[in-house]
Image (cartoon, rainbow, N blue to C red; front, side):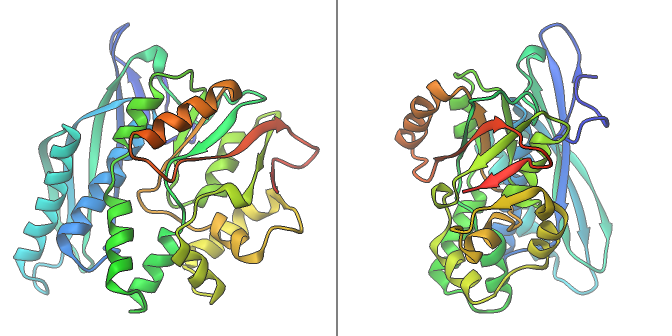
Length: 309
C-alpha cells in the first residue's frame, strides 16, 4: 500500500509491480443541475478527477446509482447514465459494470480505477519551501449552484457553470506530468482553503495565498455579495477558518469564496517556483485560460498555516 487510510488523500494507491500501481477512488452525490444528461457528465468528471490529481490515468469505472423508480421515469436514469458514459468515453475510460438500488433520493457517481508508476504518485503532501501554487479552474460553483437551485441564475450562466463542471482535468494532468510537481490535489467539497489546510497538516511549512490572483467566476462574486451562499461554505469556514489569517485588505466576499465548496473543481498543483511560469504558459496555451499562480509555500509562523494576502 502506497497511499491508504493513514493519508487524508484523494484516492488509495496500491503497488502491483515495480512499474504499476493501482489508484482507486469513489464519489457520488445528488443532482446539482436540472438536466439529467449534464448531471451524469458532472458526476463522472468529478469522480475521474481524483485519479488525475494523484498523477495517474483512469482506466475503468463502475456506476453507482440510487434511483426513486416509483417517483421518476426510467428515462431520467437513462439520460444520467448516458451522460456519464459519454464523459468516460472522452476520458478513454471503460465502464465495466456497476450497482443500483432503489432510493427515495436520486444519487449517481462512479468508482474509478487508474494506473500510475509507483515512483510518480502525487499526494497532497511533499510541499517544499519556495514552491508555487497553480489553480487550473475558477472558484464559485458552489455559490452559483445555490443560485440555480433558487431559480436565480439565467440560462447562459447555467450553461457556463455546467461547462466548467463537465470539463475533465485530463488536460492539465497530462501537462503537469512533464514537470517536477511536488504535490497535487483537486478542489472539491472542502473549498480551496480546506484543501490547502490538508496540504500543510502536520507540516513545518505554511502557505501564502494572494486572494486577488485566485480565479473566480464573476457571477459568484455578485451572488456572494448578495449573501447567497451554500451551507457547505459556512461549514468549511467554521472548521478551517481558525487556521487561516486574512489580511485586512481581503474583502469579505473574497474570504467567503475561498471557502466555497466546489464540484468537479480544478487541480491545485505545487511545483518549484522557477518552473511555475513555464507550466502556467503551457496550461493557458493548451486552452485552460483561467489557470493562475495563486500563492507560494513559505515557512509556517507559530500557530499559523495559511495567510491570505
